[in-house]
Image 1 (cartoon, helix red, strand yellow):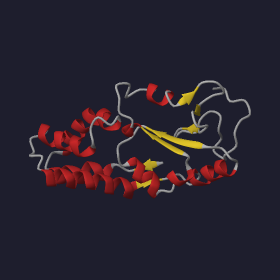
Image 2 (cartoon, one colour):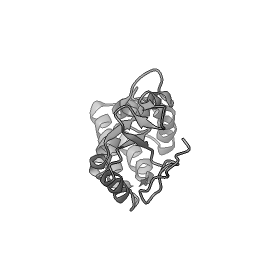
Image 3 (cartoon, one colour):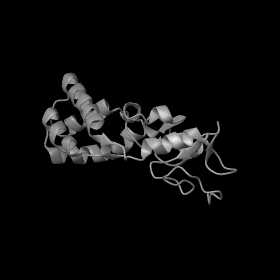
Image 4 (spheres, helix red, strand yellow):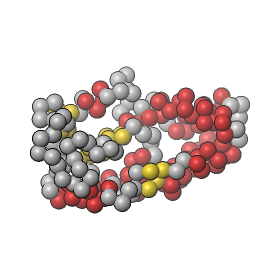
Length: 178
């Protein structure tokens, strides 16, 4: 998947009433808390506005958060082989989970793009709140070590980068090095 974030850098600061560079710097500072679920995007944008000297009025905060979601849904594009690859896995009986470090808009995006319908599970970092985030432990809790990266319910874990045991055409190597 690719996403053009240039509109974020131009449109969101205007809505928030702050300088683009200041908004970008503050968002980068708060991003870990957004992707691990400690802060919602609305909470993050309110803190960003306050840190940058703009009044975080509730209506303005909601407008910025809504625009952020709108821009993500409008600018994200799947690579041409993603859905066919997931369909191939499904037709072969391979269960899949999409695992991502992301914000709260990702589930809607994966639904909109048709990815969620082809995955057996979505494991999104922003939905897994706890002291072990960010870090791999939260995902390892869902994995059974014997036989490789398999979820407790038998779902094979594939990240946004094709895992070493899987090829982009949907075939799976017989001896997975993991």
